[in-house]
Amino acid sequence: MQHAVGGPLPSPEQPGRAPGPVPAGGHGPVPPPPQAAPYPVPPSGAPGGRLGVHPAVRPGPPPAPGAPGWGAGPGAVPPHAGGGVPPHGGTAPGAPHATGAVPLLPPVPVVEHRPGTGAATLAVLLIGPAGAGKTTVARHWARRRPVPTAHISLDDVREWVCSGFADPQSGWNEHSEAQYRLARRTCGFAARNFLANGISCILDDAVFPDRPVVGLGGWKRHVGPGLLPVVLLPGLEVVLERNAQRAGNRRLSDEEVAAIHGRMAGWYGSGLPIIDNSALDVESTARLIDEALARAIAAPPGG
Image (cartoon, rainbow, N blue to C red; front, side):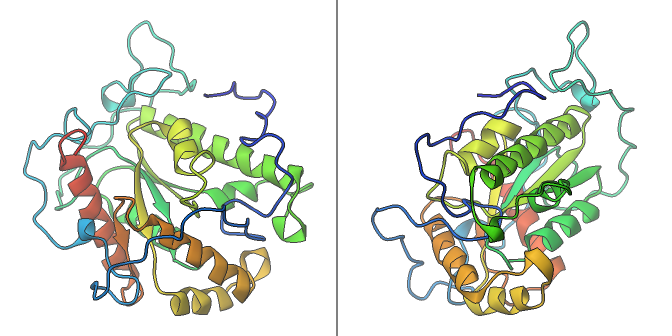
């Protein structure tokens, strides 16, 4: 359910739940895991190190020219509840756009065509624990594409609030939860606006697999059902080392990093592409993400 922009925040997705640690976003205390069966673990002997690599990101041929995507034309973004996405991001004749976007000129024609996602208009969600390198890789993937692509970071949007910023590391409460939900809604609005104007976007967030309402399901409600998730999951030693290089409220305690990383193992068995970038540089990681996305948009509907 979408809420009017500028209106009051919706009530928490789990009414009556006592304020607890941060549900996602990569900062602050970690919410206690629900009482459920243990997370599945990667199969023994899986390639890619301790955590393995999901089969969806194994090297393979790029999609054939003209292959369908999301059940529509190649690279098409499915219509959001507010209306379809006309060609080149314009507004359909006689129909006001749901985001209030100002239509831009069509993108500059692309001369260079690379394998992978090519010139497809995509909405991507890069998931991973704190220290996975989500922001760095997402920005690099956006910059290397041959078509207009935007990067939207949840943490950056959260920190737009200066006076009155509710830092979860100072204690999780209704104010910090409300600011997280507002940041996600703002990111979703921005993504829909970019897509409406023919600009792809990649968002990054530490989404927990055991919180579908405020996690992946919530992101799809905000952005649209065609959102393509990819999980970035390096080994624990790697994320601990990267976290130690951070400063300010972006740096977490080792205990928090380990807890977040452990809960991310729940994505195994989800069917999402998972990339272990423990031994990969930024360029190689971005290339694997692009290959995984190319497979996703070339797959038949429901496949």
